[in-house]
Every structure is written in C-alpha cells, then in structure tokens.
Length: 243
Image (cartoon, rainbow, N blue to C red; front, side):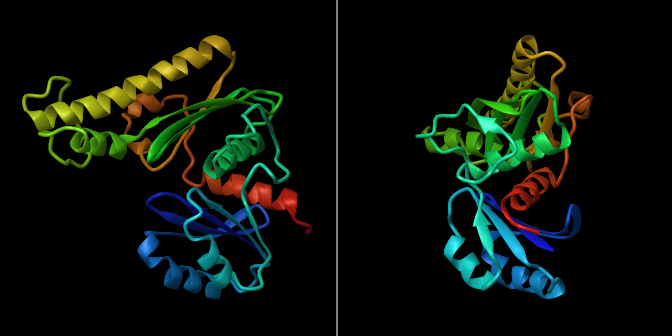
C-alpha cells in the first residue's frame, strides 16, 4: 500500500492506494490533520511507502515524524518524472503542478493536454503528445480576487464567493461577484481558445476545488477528476521506489 499526501493552501488531502487502486481517502483542514491522518494509517497498516506534495513545505517535519519509519519522498523535479519540462530550472515547478502533469501523462498518453487547476491560484500547463511540458501561466483564483479587492481598496467589502444572477450588478457586492465569476469564466474560455489555436486535438483537463463553480455547459468536452492529482503522485511514487 502507498500513502499519497497532497497539501494545499487550505486543505490536506490524503489517499491510500493498493498499487493503482485508491482504497481510502481523507480531506481535512490543516488544523485537524494529525489525529485524522493517524486514524487513516491505523485503518491501513499495510502502508509501506509515501509521497508528499506540500506546496508551502508547511508540514513536512511534522509529517515525517508521524510517518515514522515509512520511506517517504517529496514531490519535486529532482525525482524521476514521466515527462520532461522546459520550465526554468532556477524557478522550481510547484509540486501540485508536477503531480497534475504526471497524472496527465499517465491517463492521456500521446495526447496534447491543457491542464487547468482552479485552486487558490489558477494554473495552466501544456503537456504535448511527446510528454514535454511547455510551461504555462498562473493567475489569481476566486478567493484571492475577493481578498485583493478588499485589501487594496478603502471601501470594497470582504466577501465570500456567491454565484451572480446577472452580469450587471446593481450594488457594489453584486458587481464584485459578477466581476470575479465572469472574469474567471471568460479568462478560462479565452485561454482554452488560444491553446487550441496552437495545439491540435487538444484535451482539456479541468480540476481543483473551484472547478465546480464554473457553469455546467462550460464543462462539455472537459474532463474533471476529483482525485486526479493523487493518481499523478501515486504514479511518481511508483517510478521512484522499488516494488
């Protein structure tokens, strides 16, 4: 059994795999992770190795202490990966993006893939049919846009996401909701259009905690997987450890 840990800015996601099959999962906030992860490990005493993807390296030492003698690796470009990247080696590629690209190479081999991850930030990464990562782009996600408007203005309120009813907000709050939602929707649509002009037969992967906020008609032809990153991390773990 393998333990896969995907630690983002707001959630910690833990998965147990038996070879390629996911058999257990857990999603918690960082405040509750230790007791919950301990219980998961007790439910699955056959775990023999683990991989950690921690975007901020925020829990690495505590995790290693909890994992004890379980051999553990950290997701990075220093590992053997199922793709090559043109990313600047002086600017490390984030572990979440590495995991996403690994999942794309595993599940959509020999395919031009645009991976879009909607989380705290929105990331776009292009993996071509030869498994070469061409790089991508990063922009603010839903929560970050709300916080930026409040933090960098003197009058705009602090708001949480709310689906706007119309493009034309009739109050400051409605206008902010419309700006965030439709701004992200059209950004994503525009990026997909630009990439499809350059790469033929493009498969678009839409994932991340905020992907469900986009309207249903928008998702036609776009493949979304709730544990997509976990499968990528499990694939990387298998490539870098002996059976």
